[in-house]
Image (cartoon, rainbow, N blue to C red; front, side):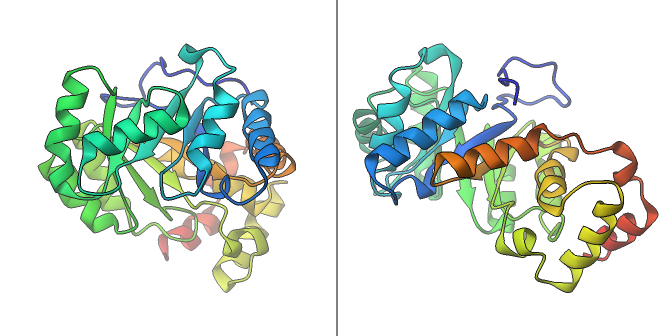
Length: 263
């Protein structure tokens, strides 16, 4: 995976553009310290320059910081979440655990945004985002709050219900970061829809997980896809999927079009 840059010719006008692929840190709190740090190292070596974490992920912030403190700070982007009732204190505590400045901060509570906006204006953080499993909630926030990014789960080959949110993001200049792409349904093709889509993909020499990773970025709003991993082997396998090109003719296949439009 070539190292993505934050400075790219824009496909749409957005205020803040994270790298195309990132490592989601939700699993970094699970293994031993050494495995978690090695996973981050493997992601970095594979060209990933966007790392997402949260105080809610156990030791994820500390372990991520341990791995990234050895890297040139200008080469990568770090995001985390607000927890608790004091956004400024939450950002300060995350910075302390990471041992690094935080670039992008996501919140769920609308009350946090004025504080985060001030931190953005003061240069403490670079960008403010909203994170939620509910795309309709994110849609309201994009409409009402001056956001740089949203983080949503599940916009995929198997679920395109969040498209109205993404369309609004385009109109508002907001970047969309998508997580939860490699779900069990995708990895195991264990639904009727997944099996049908997988069969079309296989005709073009493309696996369902490979297509799933490539699909979200076809929407102009989607700048980034987060991949979770708990071991170096897992992130290396995902990076290999990312490197494999998906032929454009797959996306133009009439059967695939019908399957996707039926979602």
